[in-house]
Image (cartoon, rainbow, N blue to C red; front, side, top):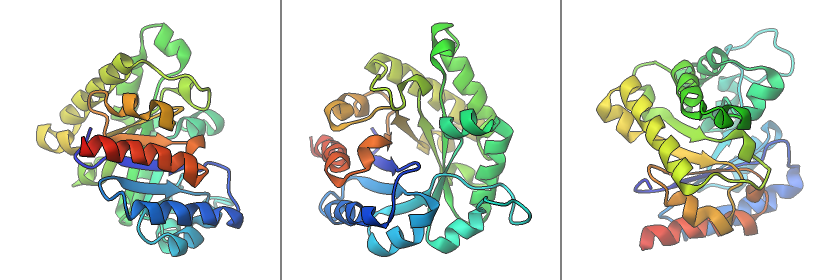
Length: 253
């Protein structure tokens, strides 16, 4: 695990202003758990309010459009996210790839747009169950990475990769520790090949997919796991802080 694990909560299409109390509780607890870097990605409508309510943790967005502006009804540019108070944006989440048909080139364009305005990015990759069963998991993820990673100067300093096996998201299923370790090692190799040994070695790799307090220690202990991208378990302070506390305890141990 990285020197300071990065635990990111993705609220997905959940959350109204009533959930700001959860963000406040997470933020206050994070003040005590300083060995863990904590962040939340609420829906667009709550970014500004979450940033005002939670001053210690990172606050980001779940997606952005690649264009700076224009006739894109319903979309949000990276500059708009930054103006709202976001510090990072998630791009290429499997639900965006599946539900909106996003390709690797789309993800790369979004990442580069975000970097251009000063946001950091979390680039998501992951295989389906069918691809894993066919023995293609590592090759699929490698292809996604190579096509999705931004190439701007210094990009590696602002990029985090999240490995999220599609078949484990929201299903309660998780891969074995050996599976996670093998994939994260494969991702590290691609990062080093892509950005160079030194820069590629510094990029954090998160695991995402049905992470909860009960399995966090096992997942975070896998090779080259630098944190977690957490979905459903990040919706309440109680469940999300359980994961954060596990990560903090592992740092102390």
